[in-house]
Image (cartoon, rainbow, N blue to C red; front, top):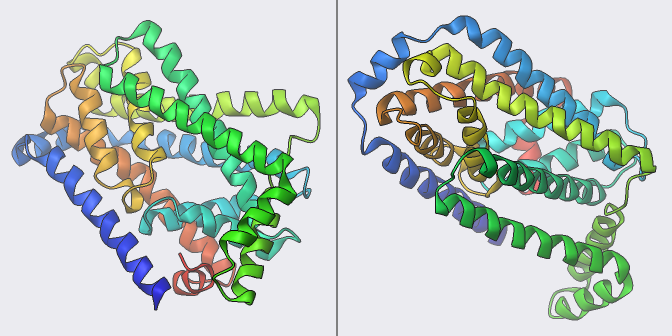
Length: 334
């Protein structure tokens, strides 16, 4: 009952988040101008954009393999399939709960535990945030970001550093961490307390340095290629709308879009990032003089191009794995 109520509250909060940001996005638009912007889209750009999206997913799965190598040498197919299924669940679930599903699906196909796999995902996400902050620092050299973006970057940086330090302390003082959890869980039943301790121990096992020194260079190059793909996706859709010539957008527009919208993706919020992504996309284009209505149309097209390939591929892979959305949610509690 408690788990069910918690799930309902997560879903309700996620939907409220979506509604709030959708209100902020729609309050300044005219639907006829949105429709007019949609009629100008050159959809021939959709195919290369989807190709870049699929390349970025493959790069992310490949990079994840290097985070897992100290634990297990995992083939690319289960990694890619787990990643797609996790992303599929992020469409329906708030707060990045699809990452838990990703770890669970990988654990079904390998000797790894789900909590150890999740530990590598946490490290992966920390690397993503650090890469985004580095990108923001570079972008601030060529574009004067609003103060709220800079402040958000500083706060995110502080939180990520604190999280990283906490994880390193847990790893270094593993026995102490387990003893502290044991004290905290004493009011719980013996079985539940033991299960939580086992999960924390397995999670800590997933926090490991890369296997070889050369892997740090490989992961760095993979991360650069990954973020270049993300920037290319924005750029291709800008070409599809002809915004570059219509509003005389500089090359930095795609960079600014990437940095600002990433805040909406990284922060746990609504299912499928609905609302947060659209509003931040609209705000980003507004910095370059793009009116609110066509900017929101751009946001919806961008979201759809990212949404449907993952939805279709994710459902196909989910079926091939002999799983269903309901069975996975039941097993993971997501």
